[in-house]
Length: 233
Length: 233
DNA sequence: TAGTGTGAATTTCTTCACAGCG
DNA sequence: CGCTGTGAAGAAATTCACACTA
Image (cartoon, rainbow over all chains, first blue to last red; front, side, top):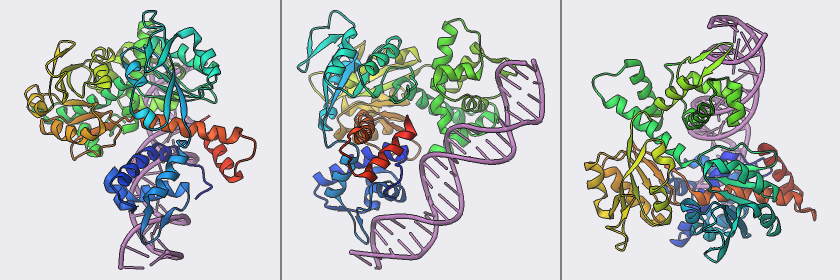
């Protein structure tokens, strides 16, 4: 299993395992079975065993996993053994919140460049990092050898921002603006659209209301709503 | 197809279609084929056709989809025909940014209650909404009939926050704290961990560096890195 | 003819079930 | 005996390919 390609679904779960292992370690638990991890993460035990097996055979049969070792291994796989410089573009409310988000430095991500196009905040400093003008993105990113960028601009600026970042050599981008951007060749873009997440929730709420409202809606719609909910609840 | 259960993967893409249709409409394009939508969203055309077919047969063979009609249909399916009151818990940087996020009201989500446990901000007002103390969550949420909650607290408060929201009757939750919370029965929780997203990116960057560094790392690790990247780029 | 809607094939992900080891 | 690691089965999601129709 060790030599196999790691499925992307597994990669997406590794940070959850890392987080969980960290808190077990803090709590002084030295060994954890897949069932212990399942209880703590909500992920099924066989899933966990398979995911971890892609990293190699680290467990002890009949016992479980050595928390400290596994944590080191998972962190290493995620590339957290080194520190990553990050560029944040867009420094209004959301961008500013991210530029100072405590969870980032804790995981070895350091915001080392901030950009905006608002003249009134260019030149000011956020946590010791100067806010620079939009048109310097490519230069600064190249000079500081930044590989990871966060886009927190208004949606109309997002595509241009991505092009600038890529021109500067960024190859991994977290796009938080409410517009999906397709990944150019060789670049990984993760689109996190919080407004879209809310819409998934409202879909769910809608389905629920449809069932609760007794003046029977259309029966067919109701059946569909019920089978939807069955899948999630 | 109409009566079928809508797969959750499809639901997660509906907001992307909605967004895309909206901008086509603004641009004055009245009709769009699945290929047009594919070009604009980065999603494959057959995927789009199948997704849309779950909502019913709205296209015209040989022509495409009527943008205005389809937009109305998608929006309706997502429950956006009505306005949704939302509770935000945690009003420090990230929470405050969300409480005033423009993209929410644009999609009919209205922040109508804000909570925090920091005495220095309780009682202050954010966009006309008073920040209330943490221990009033259940009461207020019940009274205002809020069904959707956003958790933007420190991770140690997140589980308790979820319990309070659920007690007040909230059934859909967007959890932005960097800790995964399993969904209790009947409740949908979407865990968006921005620090975890960054780790997925650093995994990718790591893989890339592993290939670029010529003093050949372990050949096996290199092979694995290459096959990973092949999947994404 | 151009483009939808959908069975069928394929791929990807998850779960089961158990052999094998500490 | 208990728990890992994994082949094999199953479920879910995606893609293909084409019948069908405006």
